[in-house]
Amino acid sequence: MMFFQTPMILGLLIFPLGFFLLSFIKDDDKLKNFFDKDIREKLFIQNKSFNNKTRYIIFLLSLTLFIISLSRPVSLLNYLDITQTKSNIVLAIDVSKSMSNKDIFPTRVKLAKEKAQIFIKKATSSNIGVIFYADDAYLLYPINQEKTLLLELLKDANISKKFKPNTNLFSALQAGEFLLQNHPNKHIILFSDGGLDIDRKNELNYLKSKNITLSSLAITSKTNKPLKTLCTKSNGFYQLFTWSDKDIDTLIKNINKIPKTSDKVHHNITQYKEYFIYPLALSLVLLAMLFFPLKNGRVLPLVLFLITIEPTYTHAGVFDFYNAYKAQKALQKKDYEKAIKNFKLIKLNKTQNYNLAYALYKNSNYHQAIKHYTKALGMSKKTDAKIYYNIANAYVQKNKLDFAKEYYEKSLKLFPSILTQENLNIVSKELKKQRKNLHKKYEKLHFKAVAGDAFSKNSAFSNYYIKLHNFIPDEEERWFQKISNQKSPTYLQKIKTTKRSLDANISW
Image 1: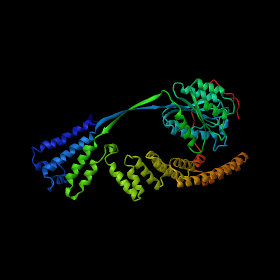
Image 2 (image 1 turned 30 degrees about the horizontal axis):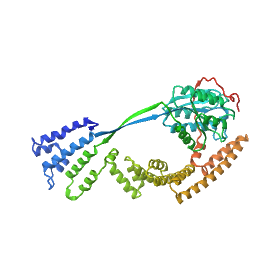
Image 3 (image 1 turned 60 degrees about the vertical axis):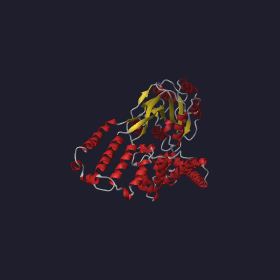
Image 4 (image 1 turned 135 degrees about the vertical axis):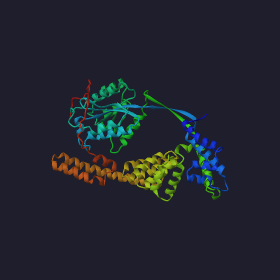
């Protein structure tokens, strides 16, 4: 059954109806006074196609159809019942003495803060709260869907010299349970070096009794086996940090795989089939017939174009076709800036996303090119392989060789290519070389820093910073160069806990 979504606009029909009725009362000369001079000349010009009266009726009919299209005639297509299940996550950041170690630049705890911020930005479908813990636990932000304030608090948090040196894992678990007690799908994620290698049986029993899943992003180069076992047995995941965002992506992917119960949000979305394109197209055809002589042949292509428009494209807007045409023409002429400008004016399908990505790549906008290449995935296996190949090339241009290697491998899994394999070999070889150089440089830096001489420390850091861009991939360089100088106060609320881990009284 068809109905109008904005029926109040139909009230405008009184104008063409009024003009139509006046046409039976007024003569042609008086009717002309209702129109602008330019319109009057068009409406009443003598030609072989239509007489004045016919042209006037066609104009009123076109206006009527245009008003009907504005009222959006639709019919009900179906109802979509979308169920969204949210995870409730507490991020527990270890701020004990061991987290101040500089074996990971700039320090373990600063890197943990950076990783936590990335997690918050990427975990869009989760409710998140943040605590700090050492010997005791402190609340920074309660579980909430709002992330903006949390990111600002975490970014500005000055957590140096505020906590006892000990690490009490139970304080994090109990504080996390306190925040999660009224929520299903309970999940705690530790950003920690893991503490000592001791038995965690008591912690595991506690997690199981409270139905909490524990995961950990290890801010250390060495796996903490007891903590890894604790995470695994609580149905969580243990992930060593990486200099790129791949560790966070992997952690989120694994967390999303965990079966969730309850806490579901239902969204009822009504889908309609749009019909506005039909009266609008007919209105444009009538106007074209009215203002352009039929003999010059310009109106026929327009008529054929408008009557062949499929309703599935109507959501994009009537001018999308014109902008898409201009974008494609600009692409053929290698005018990439113009192509990008026109593509961004339309609602893109997969093919258009691919073409826009190509234009962005050619225009050296690699980040946006990757974004639109990703949106173009799903057309065919062979095309997806080509898209992955292009994404890998974009990452090479950005000097993010880790990601380039990953996408070359994805491309090869879908479709074998000699060129892709050759590029993968080159990237792998370069990565190996960079890792080797990074390891050597880091050992040199660490040795000088431990020596105790203030001048040698400063010169080592300075020398390392200057030479860094020559051999470290962009993503790693970003981590090493990002040092926070802000000293904003941090207001924390202590959470009372009663249990203590076996290693809680040992500090190092």
